[in-house]
Image 1 (tube, rainbow, N blue to C red):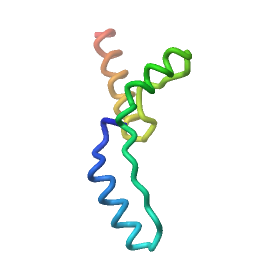
Image 2: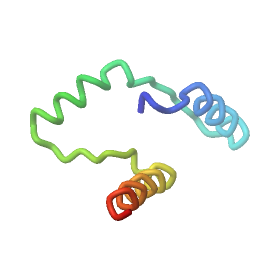
Image 3: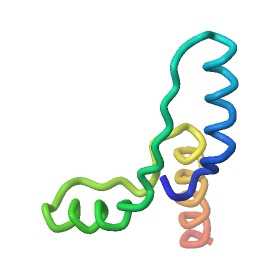
Image 4: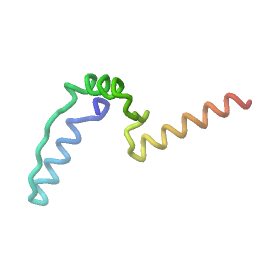
Length: 73
């Protein structure tokens, strides 16, 4: 995702790969991110409004609860 801190993720992954003696390959696919979004929409593919991690899920529900509270005041 273009919203993630790629430098931090890469540094952590490199450190762990060195510690556990496993290969790690990093590729930044953000360059075509917008085109991928547009293509998926043109094919009417399902798109969710969050990345799927537990933190974005929590944020998503927090925002929904906030909206409901505003409606039912």
